[in-house]
Image 1 (tube, one colour):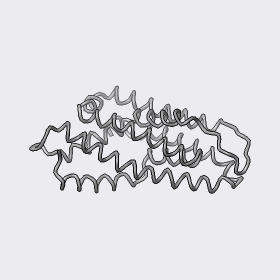
Image 2 (tube, rainbow, N blue to C red; image 1 turned 135 degrees about the horizontal axis):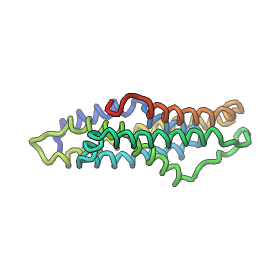
Image 3 (cartoon, one colour; image 1 turned 135 degrees about the vertical axis):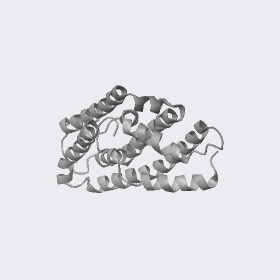
Length: 211
């Protein structure tokens, strides 16, 4: 168990990281604006659920294996990019009758959750983040490194859940407020689709496999 002082420093660092909008936050915001607060919250839960996979991978060394293989890294990277691009194209090509204040037709919550899980699991940059960030706070004189990484990882996910959840609620509220605006309704799917496409292209072309 990490010491209290270590946990406090880690919590402060985690909060600073969590509040800065990254790819996961942009994905949640796009989902919230497009389909409402509940969809944003569910997509956030999917992303945070996938974070536990990355934490376990970092704790038990799977991330080290991934980082050591350029081929494995690239495969996961491009699969994640392809999935985001697919979501973007699917959103852009979905045509619905535009009516102010019309209830939003959305994917099922189960599907939204699954998409959030897939988007985050197929992001090797997340695996790299946990592998690089969590060990910085491990005290080798204390318990096993595995248990400390698991505890720190769970704390980070708890902080990220609060931060990402607030983004989902705020973006969903803004989307609901704008839903009576005909111009917004016409641009809504283009905004969401463009975000997904942008995230996918950024994932595919940003840096080398080891950056």
